[in-house]
Length: 366
Image 1 (spheres, rainbow, N blue to C red):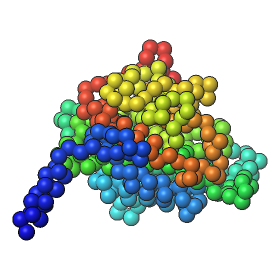
Image 2: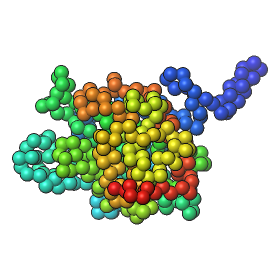
Image 3: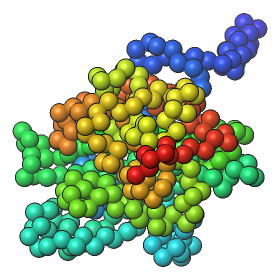
């Protein structure tokens, strides 16, 4: 019995000692950057599954995705952000049984009947009903808790499009675009909430935002990022208190144009944010595809136009699965996802705990 007791003591001591973990390729990573590999995979396996029909913007499948994301935030201990309902009556919405994390919105498309006829059935009325999911972890510092770091992704994709089926597959799963970004933000929410529960909450508050119907601009160029636009008008806090936004978009595979463990930041040279994060360990480099103008092609741009320091983090290598039915789990590189999501944990922790305030470079603000 003494041998078993000794073994138990040794195992307990070993579990308390700072650990190194290994990613799928055997490379060691610091315990500060440990991610829940199975959590990331689980998010992808649900959000990018055929069961969700491609999370079509404005569809019931998008609502299911939003409800799943809200349930994960609730499980982690993240709070709903008060004041996110259309009329600002969060209490009334909760009393009526609405999910307090979900921000419902209706967009009047303002399109001609001819244009509406070319869009999927959910647009037939000329309006789009969509939703955001918004949560917050409150900061602990009396001076900094009213400053916010925003981490965002878009939860929708193109849905099921029989007229665009490829080899009989009509479901546009959106595993990389942008279930990968959703997984990254959810994992960051889990990480921050876990640290907070163990007595190490961030000094600044952190908002986790998942925008609906970002892909609307793909279907109709005159319309773009209605979820982000609505968030700006209904977030319930002064926009000047949001110091930075990082939108995570398409990080499911490495980009051959940069190192395998690197992410790139759209508009890197427009503000001081990217360089500061890189100095604190982020594997962030400038966007290697400037001709694609990615800075203006995601939700971050709506926020940047209002003065917020807002960029998109990505590793999209212009792969041929973009906006195709085979943007599915089979084409993801989970080792890459684990590595790059983990690489952002410590730098974002620094940002949420420091006095650093990013600013636009002179002449580079949108």
